[in-house]
Image (cartoon, rainbow, N blue to C red; front, side, top):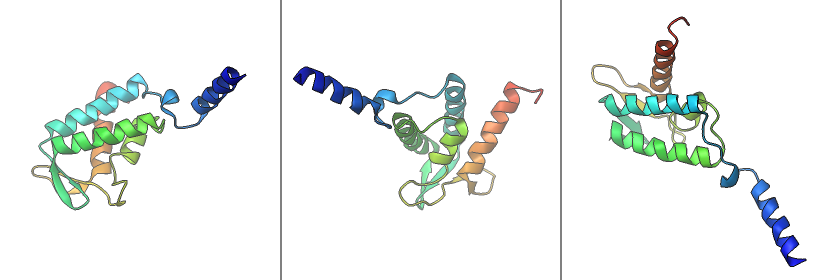
Length: 129
């Protein structure tokens, strides 16, 4: 009887939403797009403002990858847009919008920067659209 109860308890725990047992990796197409966004950020030479402090593109990428991992573990990532919205747009802690400053360009919201990069990627993959 104890064995059956333990098995039932384990089954119920695994069914709870947000457990890592059911955390799904992004679809291959979403992963390709997110990888592209990270590579663009890392190669951009841009600076990234998070909570009032400017970071290098590499530091920003490292931080956003941690946020991405969290979203994947929690099963909250379904699209590239959800990555931009939930991880790359604002601080989860303060709610402050992230900003990007690239050489020769004005400071802009990171959500716009990532959105433009995603649009460029999709346009280049499907030139007929």
